[in-house]
Image 1 (cartoon, rainbow, N blue to C red):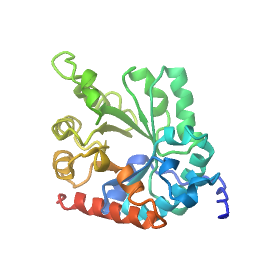
Image 2 (image 1 turned 45 degrees about the vertical axis):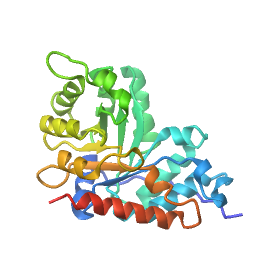
Image 3 (image 1 turned 90 degrees about the vertical axis):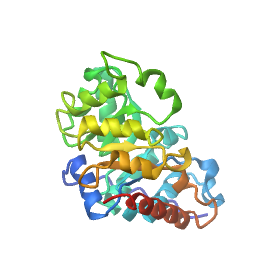
Image 4 (image 1 turned 120 degrees about the vertical axis):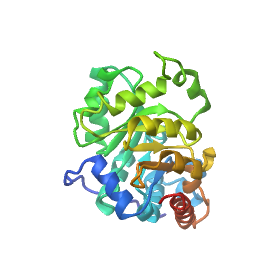
Length: 286
C-alpha cells in the first residue's frame, strides 16, 4: 500500500494580488493555459482509486507534471465535496503554494448568495482554502459580490457568458438595448471592479461573445472554459480574446489533461496533453 501523503503545514505567503500573479505567469512562463482539477475517482488509475487520500495523491501528481506549463490551477470544489474531501482540497492548495509558488489557484465554486451568506463563502474561499481567486455568480447583484471584494488582493471571477448551451436562456435577454451578459461585463469592468481584481468567465464555445466581451472590458482577464473535452476552438478563442499585449486569457482544460491516460503513465500523459494545448494556444499569439 503506498504511503499516505502527509499534509503540508499551513503557512503565510507574501502578498501579491491575483492580477499580479496571473500577469507574471503570462509573461514569465509564456502560457495562457489554466489546468482544471476535477478529480473523479472512477477515472483514476487502479493504484489510486481505493486510497483514502487518492484525490490528493492524484491531483498532486497532475500539479507536479504540469505546473511549469500552467498560468493557473482551477480546482472545482464540487469534485472534492462530493467525496467528503474538502480537507484534501485544503492540503492540495497548500501544496501548490508551497511547491509551486507564484502559480495562482482559482477556486471554482460559482457561489452566489445574499451579502451575509456571501461573506461566509468569501471566508471559505480565501481563508479556509487560501485560494487566490474564486468564481462567483453575479446574478444577485452588487451586494452579493461586495463581500469578496473586501479581500482586496484576491481575484473575483464573475460568470458572464458561460460555455453551456443553456446559458443563452438568460444571458441573451435584452436589458435596455444590450444583452444581459454584456451588462454584466460592463458592470464588472466599471463600478463593480473596486479592487481592480475582477475577471470574467466567457466560454470558448462562443468566440463571437468572447470578442464582444473583450471589446467592452478592455484588458480585463477572461477565464475561458470549454477547450478540450467541450470542443471549443483554440484558434478562434485566442483570436477573439487576446489583448494587444498577448495576454488576457486563462484558457482552461480539465478532463482532456487529467484523463489523458488511466494507466501508470497518467501524469506523463497529462503533461503531454498540457504541453500540446499550451503550444497550440501560443501558435496564435503574437
